[in-house]
Amino acid sequence: MVALLAILHLVVLVGLGVFLWGSGRLDAEKVEQIAAVMRGEDSESEAARRTASQPAVTPVLARASSEKIAEAQTSDEVARLVGERLLREAADRKVLVDAAMLKVIRQHEALATEKNEFKKARELASSERQHSGLKAELEILSKLSEKNARDVLMKKPVPDAVNVLMKMKTRSAAGIIEACKTEAEKAWAVQMMQEISSRDEDKADALEKAAR
Image (cartoon, rainbow, N blue to C red; front, side, top):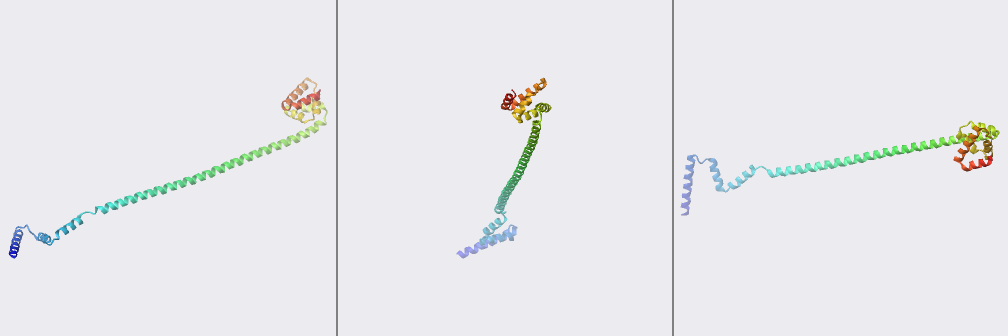
């Protein structure tokens, strides 16, 4: 009974196939597809075909994402290196500027010291010349009479005459003051005493007492 049903089923299929082939609805490709279905190969081949036809989106996206991350990391590294280089260059420039400023300051200090020492040396030389000249002048005046010494001093500038009178012995200076008899000589003597008093009151008092 089962065998008979199977034979009938096969006859029906063959007849249907002949009908479809004759009507053009069935060709070799469809026959192959039907055979594949009967063998259980359709689902696997179709799945493989769909998988093969689909673009590999995920690997492409993953590769693009990796490339962006790598580019970002490279950019950050370049920025860091550039920043470090700029900082080093700024530090180097600061060192050079500080060294140049220090050199200028030291040169200025050395020049100021040199000028100060030159000024002191010149003042000392001038003082020595003045002292030497004054000493020699005092020796000459000491050998002159009071009137002659007065005449010599009256011809000198007031500051120089005052210096000489202050360096002379009190008695000799007082004698010169006492030798002033004319109005012009007395006026000069008064001026000398005033100048001496403004510099050294004790010296002026001593001269005044000695002149009496």
